[in-house]
Length: 250
Image (cartoon, rainbow, N blue to C red; front, side, top):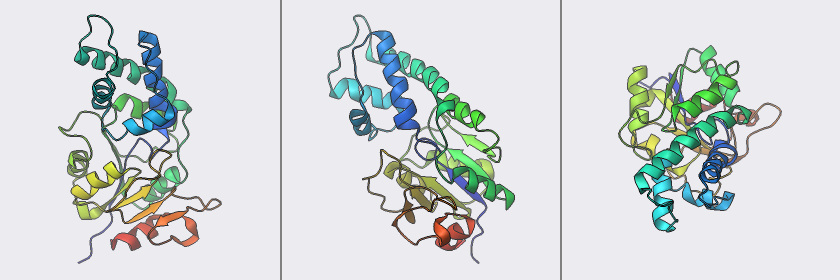
């Protein structure tokens, strides 16, 4: 018996909105400047650092690999925690100004109208996720669950956050499709046994999306069709429920 598609699980950063380039990087830089650290994370460097999952982990990697100069009397762990908290506050201020990516609101609301569950599955800080979702609450009111932050032990590419979301929704992996933008996210979804569709973000254009069922530049709108990078093209250039069902056999 074929599985029934009962849920869509969306990654957050880079998938729902271009938050990395226009939000997180800017927020980190504001924290650095406020602390007088003299560190500069330009767009290219930040793109390289995204290979490390998790904000605190990314900061620690940068400090150690780049031999970044620390303020006198600051331990790495304390400084990382301080920067990360400041960055979370700045991002929450910036997030409402970041637009949704094409097709996101359309697909979420189509899913809700068809009786599917919709969740956000991310290890991004919940405050920033909530700030963006609240600003777009009329477009994204159909979201049933936000699984975010440190509610699981391991970050992507571990499957933990997806397994948490599935359990919270009472679903099997075969009953969901994940929407991701990164290779790390694809690995996490596949490790959880979930089919995954990729909408590349500005920082993930050249990543290896092995394991994804299809790869697009975005989800598409009726007047702005999605560009197919790999996989079957959706009718009319729009990634909708009918297309996802045909792609996954659900």
